[in-house]
Image 1 (cartoon, rainbow, N blue to C red):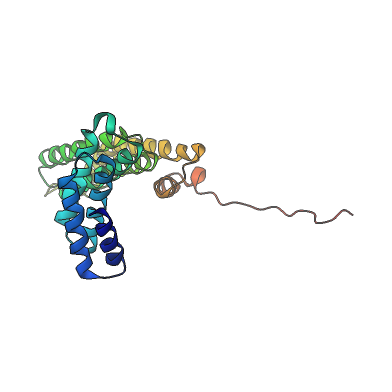
Image 2: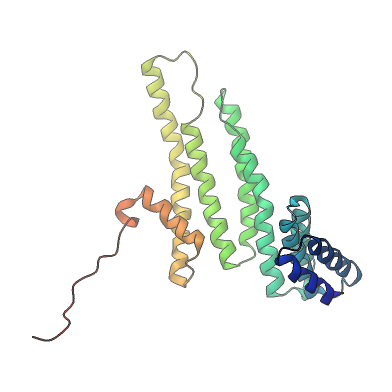
Length: 240
């Protein structure tokens, strides 16, 4: 059954549409019939998630990713570095819906109410990112840290872009804008601190996409420190 699933999976990668279904059926059957084969079942679930992407079936993909997370979480002594890695990667995908909720909440008047809703959505997302950090997988750690930094940055930006109270004269509007700017400072500081923590991973040899993105974010915020270009010096090619 496993060999058949692999053969169909190879055909699916070459563009054979019918092979996607056949491979998915065999992998799903394997998971159902041989749950004691933990290592292979984890791989089967990952393959099923990948096949669902090929089939453009987002519901199936999310279901199999959730199963990877659950299987690793309940594996006990059977847990392996590989299952932990796949679960960490899968868990990051499951955070996106909460990020979408946060991003779609507009800050409208009365601002006190809408900020409360947005902060609640942010906190829920931060809690999930914290759980992702618990996996202690390097590339997930950098992605989660970058994501947390961007949540705080987005909060600050959305506050500055928020709906203004109506019927404010010019002076009152200016005072209101100054008040908003002061309230965004803590969010901006948290964002900067998280990006700075992320770029520190480069010293440990981790210089992935998310560390690079944190460097880029810091270069915009603190160009004097982070937006530096390498300068090469002339060198002597021979002795005089």
